[in-house]
Amino acid sequence: MRLQTGICLTIFTISLSFYSNNAYAVGPSTSSKGFSGKIVFGGQTVTLKSNMIYGLSDYNNYYDKTDNNSSESAETETIINPIFSPGIAYTFENNTKIFFLTKSLEPYSTNDSGVFLGISCEKINGIGNIGISGIYGVPVMTWKDPYAVSRETTESGCFGVSAEWEKLFGSNFNLNYMFRKLTIENEKSGETEGLLSDEMDLLKRDGYHHRAGAEYIVFIGGYTNILKFGFDYDIYDLEGDAMSFKRYTGKMAYTYINTEYQFNINLSALYAYSQNEEINPLFEKTIKTKKGGGSITVMKEHFISDLDLIVNIQSYLNVTNQDFYDSYSLSIGAGLIYHI
Image (cartoon, rainbow, N blue to C red):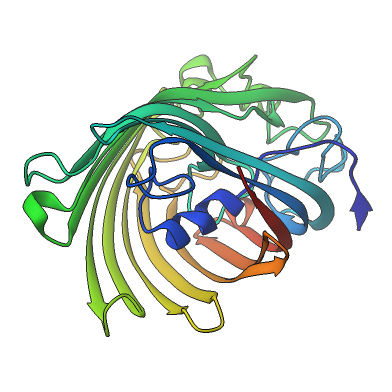
């Protein structure tokens, strides 16, 4: 386990979305006009096993640059990170809101976060709440050629847009869509394996990511117990057809809100399946992946004066038909929420 000194944006923002019950409700609800917001600060341990990720930066890294075996699973490493995750919004008289926040782009992933800047309009003549935002992905470090024995790092990132339509025509249905362009500098996948040029092209990881999702919310006992059932359909349309895939994800979450003692508990889980489009030239098979994940979040309001406490444990596991692509992550963190 290593202590890292760099500051990073983390998954904690996704935990806060369950608390607010509105992806754009940063701080007080729209009944409070003007500025509102939250800042989360704290720390977390992250345990990761992945052959495709080096670290959150050159200063927040999991792995050394060498000792890779292209036929085996990655080693499991743990680092400690500080947390700093801001969110701020300004609400106008007509319930239009301009917001800035950070949240995860992949479920339960601490290394795929984005900065969102957008606008939302709530309670639009019975239509519901509609919002759109631009996305800038927080850059992370990966490998120029993840299959090389002696690997060199490079930077990956993304940018795109996100749209959400909540409470469709007054119902408990929500729809969302995200598009982003994925970029990797100096992509050289398969260069050291003696592949032909067209075979190397099959392993390229640049490209586009589309996600369409739907969600239904059930309220039990008023707003004390909340059930969410959702489905996501992801298309990773990458330059390398052997790396491109379509993913189907089912998910659910349960939230318990205790108003007397001012604490919330959220439990969430998902299961996903994907199959890549073409045969991988290195392993001579089409890669298939099963993903499972879960999260537990507890929040206590006014833990220290006006500061709220949030504790989060989350994990995911990707199991593939090729050991090299297996991955695993476990994050345990705690932070304080300061309301602006």
